[in-house]
Length: 315
Length: 315
Image 1 (cartoon, each protein chain N blue to C red):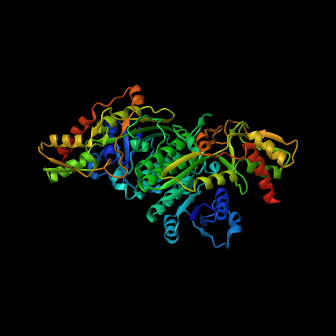
Image 2: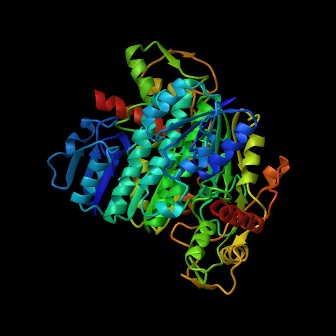
Image 3: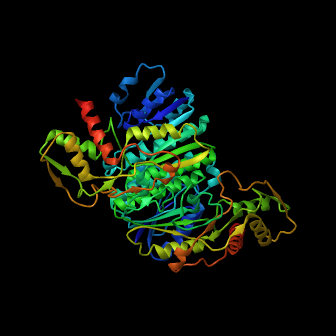
């Protein structure tokens, strides 16, 4: 198949492209390097099965031109402002990079008869469920971050486009994803801070924030498996691991993997790391488990592997 | 209070403005006459307590200038493309007039510290619930029209803004609203068609589509009552009547009220009137009833009163 990966120079997108090319697909990657990086896809340039457009997906005309030129069979839409903390003071970023990119891609698909879509949604659509094990039909959906609010908006308009245009859409809601090419988040921050000062580590919040972390390799394997034959209509799965990591636990794993001892942890305090941060979160994964998929790593194992990936990449 | 009514020249907005002025509020109305009309607010010009801006709410700079100039205490956001059938072939209209207007208003509020919001949501966020009596926590929300999809997006981003900016937000999900100044929909279409040809009436679908119709006077009274003192955070109510009208029933009422006999009904056939039309819909209204509000008219009474209003207005 000829597939488009929107946001393909990003952390998850670039890992997905590696898997798609490995599986024999031809990939059209669109990215404006807003969060994605040239380094993430540098190894792909020159391949005949890889085409790259440095374009802003919030530019509707640019998106439509790509759809008109390329004969796309299936779209993997991974483009968004994935840095929730960064957009807390600048919601415009979410309007443009999370919502408008989605609308433009859907318009490109509608006008060019493209029926297959994979969309990265997020646990952030659930808002602060106060620790409830949320399944795909949990309600009410009350996102507390601009990112979660715009992703819920994407889900809504994707639902409408899917119905109106007889599309085959697969949507995963997943939590924090980590692994090689990570660009932000607690694991990334802790490594960066400890490289600068290996004696102490400032931790946002009270350290008790507890969330599931999913290894990017597990996520990519799951995407590949469930986009082979997407049923008609809209299918939604929670995708993640069953276990969780606390922020203090992450700090301990990062120190251990970096070989650091006697690091002093200090805490900024408060229930969440920042306003819009969901402090505790747990998934009900019955649906994806019933479909036959399980994460290969625990949350803590994913953290440890990511530290090894990131340190390894930079050595 | 000094209140903004976004979309105030529209059907519901202009009826609301009449009530707000009557209650002693000072009103800033913003409308670009996309669906709203000059006639709807002609009677208000010259009043000291009424200020009008002919501006497109999808123009962010224009919206922000109004917020900077006017000291707004509370926003009634009634602006949207309310004609679902019209946007079925042009989803761009919903992106601009339903979603982007909402985002721009929220940005104007955030930057100018405005905390109070009323938002018109819709039964369309529920999608085709196959006749289930949906309450406010019904899931999953799977809108089937671009309008419903964009309104769900508005709900998502409003949820995030409310949390992030400590807003007081009241949101009503209501079904078809009818009454004086109506501009589209089955009742409006039937009157128009029967004025052109009083011997026959073409009905979209099979005539069995069954939905609750709410009289605009009832809705405005409900809005006025529950926006007097909006609690902190986001409050969502289903608002409507308990009864329903079938499309064939509406046709019969319209004929009766227009004094027409022996009109031949023809049907285009199919379960819905058009793609994206939800053919059967029923609300669970326990929450608004528990809060002390009930519609004063049945759905059929609302239809009959609307025919009298519309014919009366045009005589």
